[in-house]
Image (cartoon, rainbow, N blue to C red; front, side, top):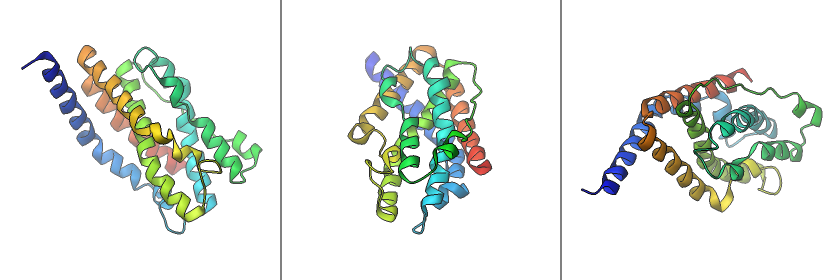
Amino acid sequence: MSETVVSDVKHELFFKRLRQETAESHQKLEANKLSQAILSPSVTIAEYQAYIGALWGVTVSCEQQIFPALSHIVPDLQARYKSNLIIADLLATGMPGETIDGMPVHHFRFSTTAEALGIMYVLEGSTLGGRILYKHIHETLGLTPEAGASYFWGYGPETGNLWKSFISSLTQFVTIEEGSAEIIESAKKTFTTIDDWLSAR
């Protein structure tokens, strides 16, 4: 068996383990009251604003804290900034600027590159779910990528490619540096942290 095949198998097994071991904390986040409200057929603009406003606090923190820590690992970080999209969506749906200015920012606690990758795995994974949420919000509230739903639209047609690119960077790190258990534990903790953050909003 060639080195490349062995490496590919290792990557696949790690990614499978990552998904399996974070499944419970991921499902708990999806059961959060704000998460459920956003998927309701009767979702309101106020609930939508509450949800994306809360997500802004963790998204901007990821950009400010995690991106710099991973600049040597993830090559296309510049394309992944999304917190500004939330601000645009809040303004487009009528939230006053002074309310936006008062929104709290989360502070992630991490000390290693592996922990930072676990955090970014959760935040980047949310872009995939965002496409599903976009469809729902577009159908229920009539919002579009140009008017109120740019955050859920995310990377648009590039969403799949950027996800694959991130996973490639993640698994390459595991091949070179190990740290797989640390990444998984950090991802699990991040799902729980965001769940608690949404519940406090």
